[in-house]
Length: 324
Ligand code: F6P
Image (cartoon, protein in one colour):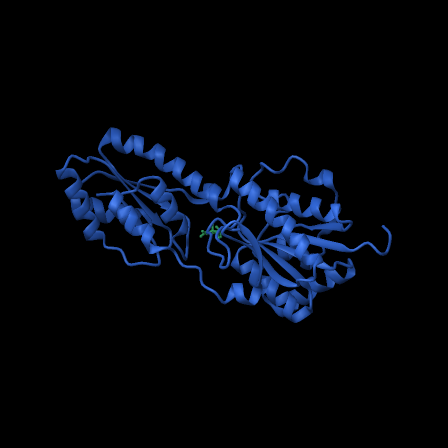
């Protein structure tokens, strides 16, 4: 390598999300195309601390655009939450002459990136990768579209059985702290009720709604609950006890995090990955790429992490009208 060649490194961190590979591919190929050397860090921040870093060539990211998960692997790193861990991570970057670090992950991973910049002066560019879609300053995070399509496919299948057997089904989707997946998948799947952590819900009211439905000839229903609102089993138990109807429940769990990314996620990841390299080379050093409308914007991580992204309550009202 000529000594003048600048180096950019990339890692994936936190929960994996479909489209991460497409983003890695884009970062690697854009950076190589702009004359940089690219290094891949395996196993997230833990790998950065431990020096699991090696060069990536174009061929290393061949054939991965349609693959879920992350070829770099991911994880949550308690060691990186401590200043000593971040100092060790910065040492790895320095020893490998890395000029820019691209971090692909959720809000916890981006918080880590910001600290690395503030404490160690590392130039970082974040890419929003999370099925939860809760990262502020972007309309979409990489992986959300695939996750909601996975959930909708499951809801559609369950509805067949719900209809055939006159049953109520409670489907639990991911979302520890927010209801973006529940709202979007519930609306798209025609759920009769959607429970999210951000807004109060009324289980006795849902029982009344089910009874009213039966009175007008509706013999099956789907309730979607975000894991952070109520567990499917607790809702099942309550509805069954109160109404006497046959209620079943299902937890979709981590299957929402896997699978081949949708075209939307692949294109989003490809656009965002290329933009990350562009803004890094332009001198941005503590920013995250977001999609606002149809345009990509680079927002300072300080702004991103002090902003809250809220669900749109209109969507819940819309779902209620559709369930009438
Ligand atoms: O952050 C994404 C997410 O899928 C959440 O919705 C979920 O609660 C969490 O990850 C579970 O992650 P893990 O099982 O990897 O800790």
